[in-house]
Length: 65
Image (cartoon, rainbow, N blue to C red; front, top):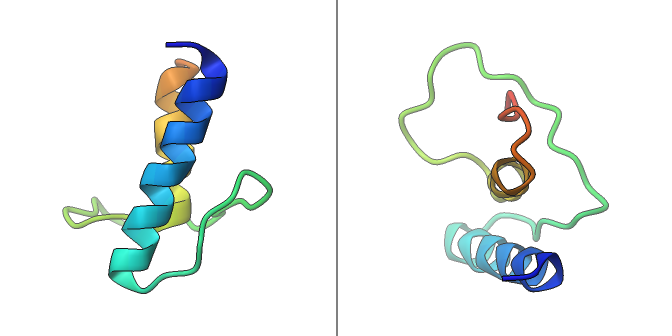
C-alpha cells in the first residue's frame, strides 16, 4: 500500500468513528493536544485515533492523547 492510499484510508476510518460517536470530524490540519492522566481502557477521540494510526504508520511515538 502506498502512503497516499494509507492516509486516505486512515482519515476515512477516523471520520466514520467520529460520526458513530457524535464527535467532530478529524482532519490532518487539527491536533489533539490532550494528555491522559491514566490509562484509557476505552476508546480515544477520533482526532487522537487518527494521530495514533498515522504515528504507527510512520513508526513514530504514540501520541499522549
